Every structure is written in C-alpha cells, then in structure tokens.
Length: 337
Ligand SMILES: [Zn+2]
Image 1 (spheres, helix red, strand yellow):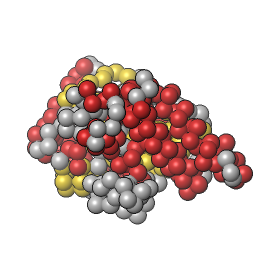
Image 2 (spheres, rainbow, N blue to C red):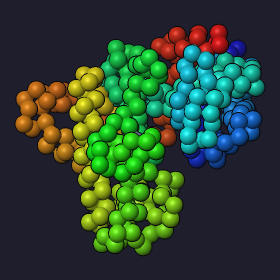
Image 3 (cartoon, rainbow, N blue to C red):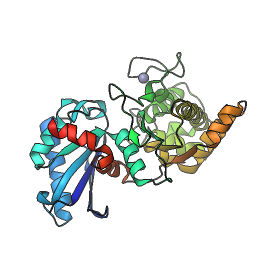
Image 4 (tube, helix red, strand yellow):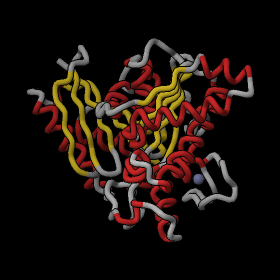
C-alpha cells in the first residue's frame, strides 16, 4: 500500500522532512543540520533522514508513493537536476534521479520558493484563490508565481527571480554582478552587510555591541534578525535599514501586482519572522506609493498582503504539493527523465 508522501525542504542550514498520509495528516517530522556540499554525502544524508522519518511513521519506503524535494537554487524541472545551488555549493547535481534511485521511489525536485507557492495554492491557507505570489525573502529573494492555478516557471524556469531587479543602480554590489539589486536592500545578507558598513562608518547604533547571530550575518557583524529586533527598540540605524527594506518590498509588491494582477501576495522566508511590525511598515509604504493614483489604489485595495508567519511546514508542505495532480505534468516529465 503506497499511501504516504514525503516532503523534503533543503535549506542552507537544515534539512526538514515531513511525512503525510493519504488524508494529509502528519505522520512524522524530522529536522537535521545542513546538507553536505559534497553531492554523494548530501544524497546519502537526505536519503537517511527520509528513511528515518518514514520509520518514525511506522512504515517503510514501500509505503511511500513519491518524495517531493524543495531546493534553494535553480532546478531543471524537466529532469529534476539542480543546475546551481549557491548556498549549498551544488552544481549540475542530478538530485531527482540519484535520490530516486537511492530511495526506490520517484523524487520530484523544484526550487524552494516556487514549491512554497504551489503549497500555498494547494492549502488555500489565506482563502480561495488561483492567482497568488509567494515572495520568499531570506538570505536572497525570489518569488513563486501561481497564475490561473498553475505555477508560472517561464521559458528558463526563472520567472520570479526578482531579487535581481535593480532598484538603485548606484547601490551596493550584488553577487550577480549588478549593483543595487532588490536583494541587496531587502534580503537578509544585504541588510546584514549594510549594518556592517554603517557600523564601520561609525554611525550611532546599539548594533555595534552585537557579535551577530543567525545564518545571514555578515562575517562578524549583526544579522538581519538583530537589525529587525533593534528597530523595534528604536535604534536609529536599524530603523533606517528596516524602513529602506520595507520601502523596497512595498515597491516590489506593487510591481508584482501590476505585472501579474494577483489576488494574494504572501511574504515568507526568514524575514517573515519580523512579524506584524514589518508588515505594518510595508503596508504604510505601499499606501504612500499608490496614494496619488486611483488605478494603483484600486488594484492594491483588492490585493490581500499577508505574512506567512512562523509556519515551519511551509517548505515541506510545498515539496509535498509538487506531488499533486496540479503538478502532475512535472511528475510525469521527471519520471521519464
Ligand atoms: Zn543581483
């Protein structure tokens, strides 16, 4: 009886696994430290944690119909190959095929932010809609776009890579080679780097006392999470950085709504842990942007803007959603590959 489905969410610092049964009830949940940058080791590691989780559910791999895998990187959806995952150090890794061979079940691979968008559409957590954007803001930024109930990938599978839209051509250098990309302003790594730069320039802040925590810190400086919490206590530098990030996010939300005319925009990723104060700042900025335009005000008033919140299953649920009939085209293509 193959009734279990497994979702694997691979992050820069952890592998999360969720096992659900035919009624979507959680049967097991596992979280282990980072996947290795060495492909053989990584596949063995992911395989082991999946087997452990399935055993915890009181089952064996024979009870599993398929495994969905969400990866922070560029994925060739036709083959399930990971072309490039910078934070994991992977390049041209045939993850779907190799993991499938190791586990003896079909494995479907997708970019993590796009998988989360598919998961949000499937769960309809924020109300019924077939048109939504999931804006994933972590170390970097990208968006998963669901149009008319289907994930919009684009010709090269790069639709939604808005982290590299240039907002300030004179801004900080981005890893992609451009300057002032959206993610240098609002991404976790960009915020941490901007804090470090300001501290080095002796700007007044309580952040200079911090050694930094979290995985998006810039070497020895404060992390983006430190910056967000300092902003809530009124630190002037932190407030400036958070306001700048909120303004950039608001601008991008506006552009996403104009580009895709979606009903719902959900902001997730590490930044969503900053919670209601951040959402309020983004909403205020958004109102300021659209105020002079009746059209923009109308569009935005009909768009629901939400934070994903502290939902630790959003990544694994997204990976499981890849196995759904809504994504069956991908399953079929990867199974052939
Ligand atoms: Zn860039």
